[in-house]
Every structure is written in C-alpha cells, then in structure tokens.
Length: 411
Image (cartoon, rainbow, N blue to C red):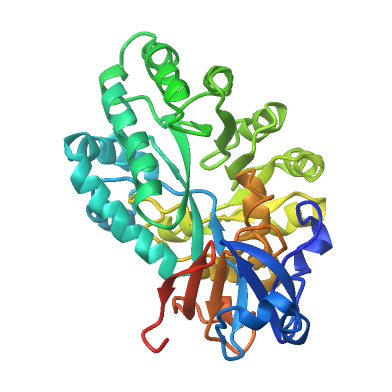
C-alpha cells in the first residue's frame, strides 16, 4: 500500500517517498480514513472486529489520482484537426484558420446543456475507471456570458450528480472570442466583459474556486493576464495559469508573483524560471499528454524542475484539441519515458502534489487518518508496473469517500 503521508508537498528527493506499507490496511469510517497501518495493526483495533472487510488480494492500493487540469465540458472531439496536425499543420496555423479553441467554442455554444452533461457524465465514469477520484475542470469553451455560465453551472450539477469530486475553474480568458478579434481594443473590451458581466455572477453564485488565464502567444499577454487574475481574486477566485506552453512569455513569473496555486504546461520555462519555481509554493503542473498528442519533441523539463526543488505535479489536460485522454496511468507512462521521471516521482506528482495544486492537500492526495478514503487499486505486482504497461488500464477498483465507484468485472 502506498500512503504518500507526511507534511508538506514533495520536493526533490522526497518525491520518491511513497510511504509504502507492506501488507497494509485501512479502517474507514463515514467516508474518512480512521486508521492506517499493517493488516495486523488495523485488524487488532476494536472497531475493526465489527467492520465490513474488503480483501484486495495483495494488489497495489494507493491514493486515488488527483487530476488537477482538465477541460471536461466540451461538445465534441476535434478529430478533423488531428489529421491536419499529422499532415504538418501547427497548433497555431489551425487556430488562425478558425480551428483550435474557437472550433470548440462554436460547437459548445450550439450544444444544449443536456448534451454537454451527458458527454461529461460518460467521461467522468472513464476517469473513475482509470483510478481518478478528483477532477479539476475549467470553463473556457463558451467565451460569452451565457455559455461560460452554462459550463460553470454544469460543473456544479455534475458535482452533485456523480461521486467524483469536481473542482471548478473559470477560464473565460482562454482566447479572445471571434466576435472581438480584429477590432481595435478587442481583447481589452472582452476583459471588461469578464470583469463586469461574468466575475460578479461567478463570485456571488460561487460557481468557481479558481480563475485561470491562457497567457501565451495568440492568447493573452502578461499584463492582460494579471488584470484578469486580480479581478478574479476580488471575487474570491484564486489564480492559476496556463504558462509557457507555446513560447516563454513570463507567465510563470507572473504566477509566482500572484502566488497562484499552480502554473501549468511549462514547456518553455528558462533557467531563472526553474530556479524561482524551486523556491516557490506555486505548483509546477506538467501536461505531457498535450505534447504527445501534438507530436512535439519538447516536453517540460521535469528533471531540472525536480532538481531545483519545485513542487511538480502531473495532470491529463483532458480536452478535445490537444490531449483527448482521461487516463492518468498513461500520463504516468509519458512522464517516465518522455520526461525521465521515475515511477515513484510520477505517482507522487499525480496524487499528493496534485492535491496541493488544488489546495485540497488536507483532504485528498494521500492515505492518512482524517482524509477522505479515496483509493485506487491496481491489478499489478508492484507500483512500477502502473506506468510500465503504457496504454493499458490495470485499475481494479476505485473508491471515493469510502464507497466503491468502479470495480473490474471479476470483483
């Protein structure tokens, strides 16, 4: 059993400390972990004698994955763009022709809430089947008042209707919408719309916990991003940031200046960014699924970030354009083979460090007394086999708050 217990986020060599208990056991009461230890220690407790027992048969148990960066609510795939990318078109070339994010915006605006919810429910079942128990999800495919609010309200409904924990993020500043493009001051006018028409409603209705901005070439500048994040904070939304994905803009430095919960992507960080992140409380969330799907050769410098002492986490970046995967085990495989993280480092980055990225480290991300009983069980001989079998899902059971939410057919 991998417990990942201990104080503070994992940095440097501590990323490899999985808190392994051989022949381990948990006692769960009212959805929370009441005791952790060896089987002998836990079974000796008076309460354990009358508890319902679930024998995992020697399988590997660990904290449920915390997927701290997804775009769950969208209307359709962008498979047509996949072929264009294979033929050599770049992400930015596709975007300039009305594809990319704006393609998803067009489809989402036309979709009903019922259709969007049905698609999201199906995806959440697949997340659970891969061992994920908490999912952060962003708006950003609406880019107008009605559509952005539609997405955020769906986050709230989905959280109430199914067992996975959903953390809602407002990403209204994803890109400048088509109706504002090519107009003088278009980006500023759109930001004004966010400030005056979206954030007040989001804040008052508590539709999101975080405010995110895509700070990059072709999206929003550092100055514009800071304005949006400051406005979000005034309405109680903590900042996080899409940073240094296509080119270095200074977004990672902005994230640290704003004390953002996380800065995500980071393919183009430089040495000074890496050193600063090593001393920062802002989590460096890496998204190798995006680089893999786009066929990019440059992944985020995970080894340099770890050696500098940064709080490194991993997420799927599940979205229809650049990372259409729900599988955290596949992300672990990519982290190991493409970014040279060890299996232990990757597991830590996808659990306890990802919990810090969502500021939920007190309730999820490790198997410790008082935390939610969020558990992923894998049909493998040892934990290194989880990323070793790439593209294969060996998740045997997923438990959220002490309740089985996914089980393989043989269970």
